[in-house]
Length: 124
Image 1 (tube, rainbow, N blue to C red):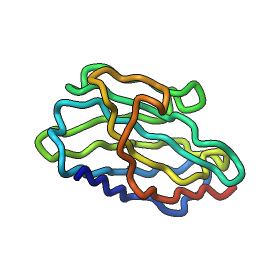
Image 2: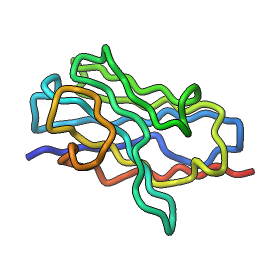
Image 3: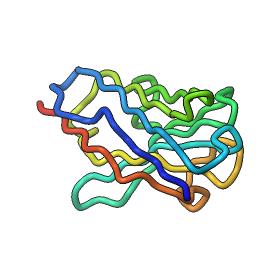
Image 4: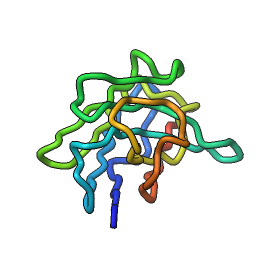
């Protein structure tokens, strides 16, 4: 059974940084792309970033390009999301997910297993 455990969320002031981690188990981690999504209160879940199976290719939502960086460590079965220059509009629950393919896609229908989420709150 695939399990994803996110950590690293918290409360930060605007302009600050956080690093999210997602540790996976129950799968051959290096066989799948991984992604981060987020959901703010009253809004639909939206794509944030994805990374292909090897870490050589990434995709980002326009809203986070240049501020967020996704990376992975296949030996540790962990995917990371480094978030810099955080803004109040980045406030959301952040979820990591396993893709059904190797390439870094951007739509949620290509992602199967999801973590429980970690709250990120950015104060102004």
